[in-house]
Amino acid sequence: MTGLRFDPERLRPAEYVCEPDPRSTMFVKIDRTNGTSRDIELADHHEGISKYVLHAGVPEEIVVQFETARNVYLYAWFIYRFYAVAEHQSLACLELALRERLKAEIKAGKIKRGRPTLHPLLQYAIGHGLLKNEGFSAWRNRGEIRSRSRVEMEKIREATEKKLDKITWDESDIRVTPEDLDWDYAKMLAEILPESRNEYAHGSTELYSVAALQTIRVVCEIINQLFEFPKGD
Image 1 (cartoon, helix red, strand yellow):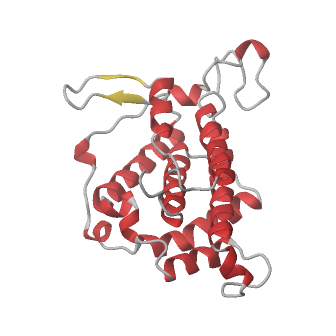
Image 2 (spheres, rainbow, N blue to C red):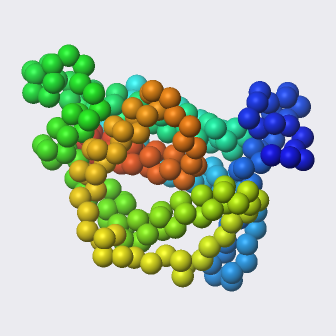
Image 3 (cartoon, rainbow, N blue to C red):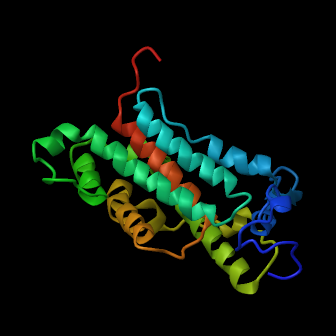
């Protein structure tokens, strides 16, 4: 990156601590009612993460770890590489939540003796009905969301490869295919999430802001399914 007042890949100079990472402002927000657009702002970024909240039935120690992931994601506005840290933290929080919810089963040796990893924990939760496709917003809106996510990732890669400052697309780019409508979402997550967790644990260069937010959303929906919502709330 040239022409910048600071190198976003290095320790931020004190006078620029509150400056957004230049990659955070490369997108625009489109008003679908009139077709106008404006630069994305911190408030838009905050709005994106603020909607994912754990309910009151989730143990406090898990909530704190999830809130850490949300805050790291929020501050990725200033340090773009925090997206990977936020995603990793959310996956660690997910494993913590599964171990807490299934601690009796783990103690009884129903899952795996010792300290079970994310994959068998997810498989057990899905196999015993604790996690269901219906509990995921992506499954409920599976066709459009899968198609939209595919287009978003393609556009982000295009912007990165061409070194574009901004990238836009419209609704005509979103085309739902038969494949988008036919999938066992929970089963797919049981395979994908442990792979992502392991990749971060062993070192990764992946850096996609959209992917981080999607993972945090999924983790939120899984944890909210694992624990019973308090009666009367």
